[in-house]
Image 1 (cartoon, rainbow, N blue to C red):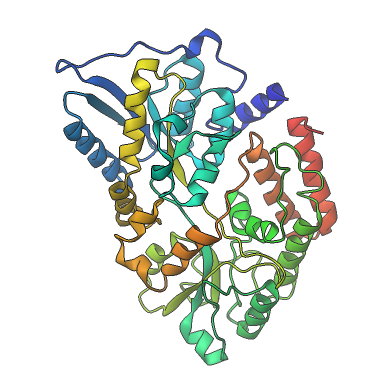
Image 2: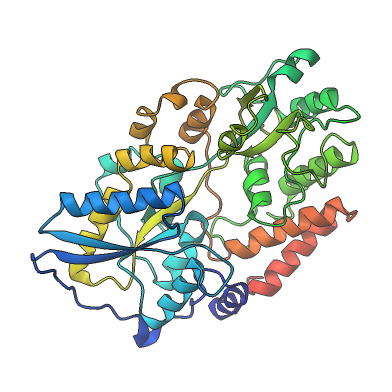
Length: 433
């Protein structure tokens, strides 16, 4: 199976493409010390100083070097994520194969399993106490754990909710859901129907997306029914991606589009331009809404499937990991760098830098916006209902096939047929039948 996955990831230019083992190329370098005797550490991040997030990373490294002067000294490389050969993912690919990985680097939460399986990152459990880890959002621990071992920790998290136009709700006599009492899909559908007019959709849900957006937005509705898109071991999709729960969700998506309550090809910024009364979208949306001050908006939690289902919400973002190529004598220092980059202060700083929710409960208390509506909804979800996407070496394949199935359904294919085809393609690409 691993060779088939390797070929697929290489073809897709994913960050963990060198999965077949690095032979002698992945050997660690001996620890080096600076003139003052401090251990030299290297770290790569996926944002440059052209962004506020990138500026924060640089600032944190400067503070780390001041704090640990004479003990550790970190050097940061900031590499933009781009589609060309100079992009972050491609540099990680090359470094995994040629032995050039830094001591610490940023990892997208959904790729933890691939990196861990390839030996590109190492477990960090032994460097953190249970008390330290208990402060992190449960979803951060969940997304960073593979085969029972913790590999990554992050400073930021993410969530998805239903943004709504307060004025439209008031005019339609609709009472919004609360964090503790989310709507069911039937209730969401009824509200969307009531809010749909000739020039305004009831809700926009990025249904034209052909990427990770689809899985991120709609997987919680499958998980709400107690199911998932892959098996617990992360390998099989038969009976999961094409199971009853997934059929239910795609049938609902199709019905929303067919009835005109949601657009299969939504216009950009349709919610902000008042062409949709609600928007199913993520924690990045408030920053976008700041550009549209005339929109009187509120935030509701992610809907659950029905009254008998549990509330589940999306989560997950970029994290920090210690490289498998980090020399043994440097690993304690590398873990200390991960600790520093994911501290309460760093997590709180992420919100100021990129508007994303923090990864730690102690950081929420430092950010006034999360102590009140509307953003208190995201804090509640990340504390109580968040469930990570599958930690699977085949996750990228599953996500791509699920998004393809949604597009096929929206263009006329039968729901079960589209999902069966997704499973067939997944099996063909991963050889996990």
